[in-house]
Image 1 (cartoon, rainbow, N blue to C red):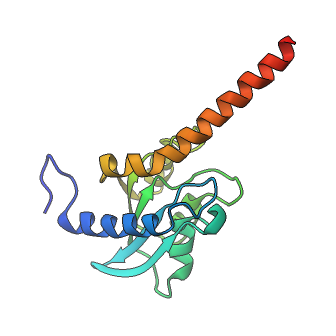
Image 2 (cartoon, rainbow, N blue to C red; image 1 turned 135 degrees about the vertical axis):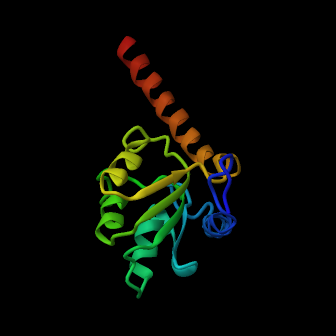
Image 3 (tube, one colour; image 1 turned 180 degrees about the vertical axis):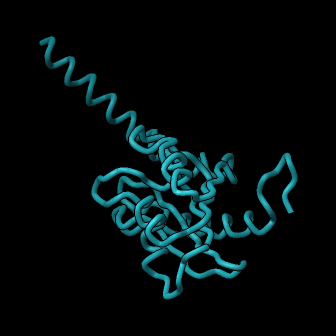
Length: 168
C-alpha cells in the first residue's frame, strides 16, 4: 500500500527492481544506448519482460511487448528509463504502448535527451494512460545517466573542435 509520501506500492518496487536487474544484465552490451529493463504486469502477474537489444535496438519496451503471448490491454508497464517518444532508429515506444492499450506506465528516470524528456508523460496522459515516474530515481540515475554524460561530453568536444577549425 502506498502512502501520500510514497506513491509507489511494495509491488511497484518489486517489479521495478526486476526491471533494474534486467537492465544490469545487459549493461555494457547496448552500444551507445543505455541498458534498459522492462516488465509488463497484469493482475500482479508478470506477462512479459524485455531488455534493450544488443547494440541498442530494439528498445526494452518493444522487446517486452513483442515477447508477450498475452493480451496486454489493461496491463502495467515498468521500465527503468522514460519510454522514447520520437522517431530515430526505431519508432517511438509510446506508439506501441498506446497501440497495445497498456493502462499504466511506471518509469524510474526521465530521459535527458531533449527529444524525449517530459514528452512521454504528456503523450501517454493524453491517451488516458496513468503515468508514474521517479521510482528508484536515486538508485538508477547513477546507472543510466553516465552513458548520456559521456555522449554529451563527446558532443561538446566535437563542437569545440568544429568551432576551433572555423577560427583557424
